[in-house]
Image (cartoon, rainbow, N blue to C red):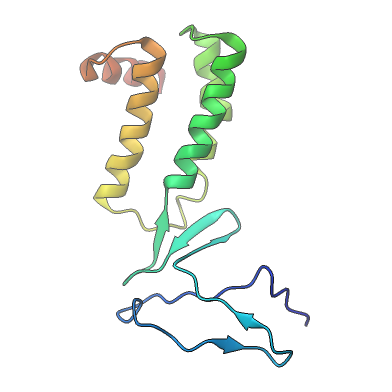
Length: 138
């Protein structure tokens, strides 16, 4: 099997994740670099004591897609825009969450992203209004 060294990296997960490791050199003499974060199948994993996923890239991709929709249709809060965001943008944010063990902090982070999106869509800062809209729509 041929290894693509440009796409290969090493990462430690466990109690000694932050200990400096020896460089790994292949038989060809190519050094495989150590990373603190890697991407595999669209999931960003982070070097930590336990298996952990980074949600920052999903948040950025979600907001990029939502802003692209807003750029085309304007910031109108119609039923069609909400369906479009629900069908096109929300899967971007929720992709691969089944594979990632989510902590309470991660769940609050996802909730914050969705709440900020609704605040922008409905042009409000009232969280109660946002929660009512979410319960009706989702």
